[in-house]
Amino acid sequence: MLVEIAAVGLCHTDIAVQHGHLPFPLPGVFGHEGAGTVVSVGPGVTKVAPGDKVALTFNSCGACPSCTKNQPAYCHDFLARNLGGARPDGRSPIALSGTGIGGNFLDAMSAALGALAHKGTFGIIGVPADPTAALPVPIMLAQVLGARIIGIVEGDSVPDEFIPYLARLNQEGRFPYDRLITALPFIGINDAIAAQSRGEAVKVVLVHNLTAPDN
Image (cartoon, rainbow, N blue to C red; front, side, top):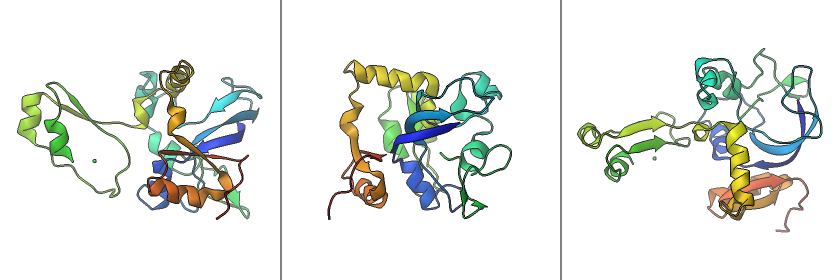
């Protein structure tokens, strides 16, 4: 499927891969939060057609036990499909000077547990700055509270359901996520990364139809 990209979110995961906190073949192309228009599709694509407006997200196999339970974020083939840098057949989807490159892309425990109510859940999200980081778990406190500690991947979501749901909430005025977004020109991607790192923007979205500001 070929999509003409109108905008792409600058995600913390992209920055984590850039700095080597997640395994991914470099050089590579990141940017898994795309939005745009379908230009063309292959013979096996039935979900969308040319002209459709789409949002791009993570990949899943659709056939493993997790996928068949409607839990694609925990696909058994998640790492290979999203961080392997290639299609399932091993081919790179993008090349630089004729050579394939990486593509197909995509934290204080005790205090948090103490704030949980009984039978509460502590969710671990985001990419740690240190990929070998470990969490000390106060076992007695967790047992007394009946607390659950779970890792959360991609918001524990089903994209085909969750993304349209968020869009509906926004249209109804119940989730104004547009207030969190700072649109910046794609040509100024390095400035955008720096601005987000400095905390000057909550969520940067890179678009092609903006002009970079004068310095």
